Structures are given as structure tokens and as C-alpha cells.
Amino acid sequence: MSLRLGDTVPNFTAATTEGEINFYDFLGDGWGILFSHPADYTPVCTTELGKTALLQEEFAKRNVKVLAVSVDPLDKHLGWRNDINETQNCNVSFPIIADDDRKVADLYDMIHPNASATATVRSLFIIGPDKKLKLSLTYPASTGRNFNEVLRVVDSLQLTSNHSVSTPADWQQGEDVIVSPAIATADAEVKFGQKLREVKPYLRYVSQPGSN
Ligand code: BEZ
Image 1 (cartoon, helix red, strand yellow):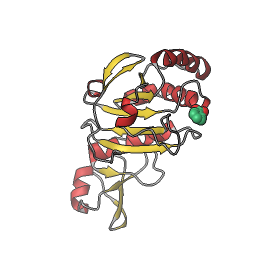
Image 2 (cartoon, rainbow, N blue to C red):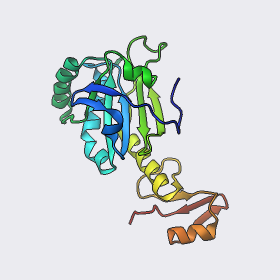
Image 3 (cartoon, rainbow, N blue to C red):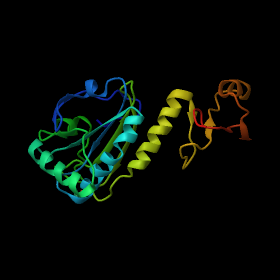
């Protein structure tokens, strides 16, 4: 069955380009991103893993560990990783799971038979420190994901987790955020140490907590 938001994600052990990994141990008490790609030595996947590697510092700053997966074997991953580093001008240091027995792909429902009987689709899961699923997305093989958007979602999720605020459409780092309708205005003004900008009683903004 597919995972739903709020579900506890399943643990697993797997062979990876960085050695054997126990998923929960790998995540520790931080955030995690597990994402699948259809196959090694394919063009879109090459750019996706390269982009992720180039953003690795940004993920680390947010205490997010990244883990890629496809059903290709380890020796293929290792050869392909050299190509990614060479062509995308990066250094892939996050693990890539060799899931040739499809253990992880099946556990996370990453094979969608009407798209491909054998290859994983582009699934991506953001997992919180509580091991609960915070976001999932599914893209087809032909569309590379936007990893800056993934970072933007992590920022939003972490703001919600740390400050109980929400983020509006197209929100970007540093812009005003939304106060939950469940908090009374007087309480919110004490909590955030600022006056709310009230557009409607249910639509109230504050400056992003923690930004200058
Ligand atoms: C790609 O990464 O370009 C790709 C992979 C599998 C199917 C189609 C495209």
C-alpha cells in the first residue's frame, strides 16, 4: 500500500555506494529525503543526481540527509557516479541504494506498473525527525524534478515544525508567513513578538520567524 502523509515510514537495510545502511540509523534524529530514479546511465537521472550533489551543502545546513535509489546494481551505480561527477561538475557523496532485489522500491511503492513494469518512477519522500512522512511527490521518467523546490518545501516544513506557521503560495525564504487560524490574534502577537498583518480574520501574516 502506498504511504500517506503522517504515516511512519518503513525501515530497511540496503547495500549502497557508501556501504550497507540501516535507514533509521542513517537518518538519526534529523530530516531525510529518499528519492528514486528510473535507471542509471540515463540523461534526466544524471542531471537530477548532479543537481542534488550540488545542493548537498544546502541540505546539510537544514539537517537533511539525502538517499537515492534505483533497481540497478552496485557496480553500475559506481561507474555511473563517475559520469555524474564528470558531466555535472559535482561530487556525489550521498549514498545511492543498489535495489536490484526491489526491496526498497516495493516497500515504498516506487514501481508503478502502468508507467514501467520494472523501473522505479521518480518518487520523492521527505521524512521528519519523528520518521513520519511529511511530503511525497511522484514525477514521470521524462520530467526532472526541481530540487530548489524540494529545498523550499523543507524550509516550509521546518518553519511549521519549529514555529507553527504555514507558508503561502509561491512563498520564498524571508517572505511573510501565515499564522494558524487556531491561534487568537492577541496570543499570536505575544508568541511572535510583533503585530499581525490582518488581511481577513482567517488570513493573517507575520514576518518569517528567525529571519532578519
Ligand atoms: C532519463 O533519465 O532520461 C530517463 C530514464 C528512464 C526513462 C526515460 C528517461
